[in-house]
Image (cartoon, rainbow over all chains, first blue to last red; front, side, top):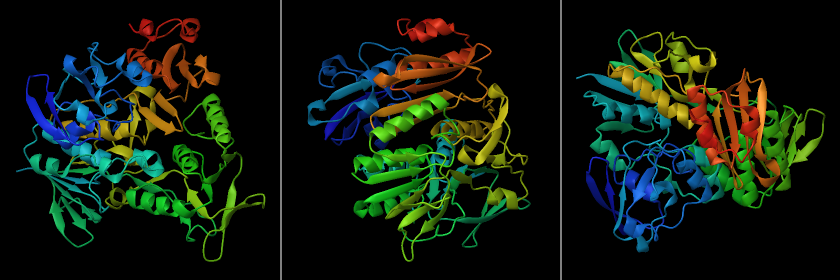
Length: 106
Length: 404
């Protein structure tokens, strides 16, 4: 389990325990956190699960894959800490992770 | 209190329910599914679920708590036997009558079965729903020789998943190339070569005449008389849309339930969405029935918007993806009608995109391991861009430069 804080664009915070082995995107869906659409179900095919990873965790969450990088290239309001949450696997090392959501997905 | 009844608890039915709540619909929502399972993702059934990478508990579209919180009454294992339009009621196989103010038909379809001798033998499978995937996956455990009839997306994805599990695979396709219905010839040929490279015996222009076996399938007979041995057969011959309820209720059906650009049938209280719905796609100037996650989600959203009295116009740029081996194929738009193709990138490197233009305007893109090309193409199609083919071909020109 890792405690993850999802912060919606309007500032609403959702602090939830996410089991290890699933993705940050799945953690949001399973815990009813709004703001992550994940149309493709986590296949890295749609770029609708975009999040901003808090600076303290950008190293722990790792690098974007090249496919992820290219999908993000055309998402709205992409920043250095943008990730597709379906591509971040939850591990104990991510305890305390904070991700923020963009104003819109896609 | 108004009542919306949704028949079909797949991706489209669930999307309609979720969008209704998102739009603050205040009536009751009942979601009826004939499968025993709660709404789940279908695409992995032929991909990561079948290859064993994704377990069942990662297929659910929503956790159980969502249905309670959203006040969506999901009822699984319920078969609907008829629509009574004059009474505005749905009749279930158990004889229950459920009233509706709005009805959404999200009945999807069933794997098409082909009328050949031996098609009912044990050892012959189709793959559309979870139960079928589980049955087929179990059979694959002990299978050594799998024959797949049909080289569409399901057939090829299963071929790739089965190769990952170490099974010998033969794919038989009646058309002269794989993925003939939706992909360009160049892409078809390239994917065919990839499958052969992974050891799949892919045979095109090879119609079958029957499945052989006394008590269990032992092979497939080809139209030319040859026998191909098999201990497991998958018929992957496309989808038959489940239009029976609509048809029996007198709604217009033509390989799909006919709907307008708000997903409405001719009966203004009844909508049809997803794989089962046929509509005029204005952007491409033709009637389509789209079998994709994109269409399931977005057409259902359009229906929900209309039910809420906030109508939108559904005129999508269809998108679709397929995972085979380490390849991610992404397709934006519809290829049919294109008069020019521009290739960007080198197929030899396993990373390329095919752009399809009509009178200079981009109408579709097939991208293999090429995210930027695919993402840019979606926007270029929406913007009606007429890219310079020479620049498009040049990988030194960033895709971003083509957007207005």
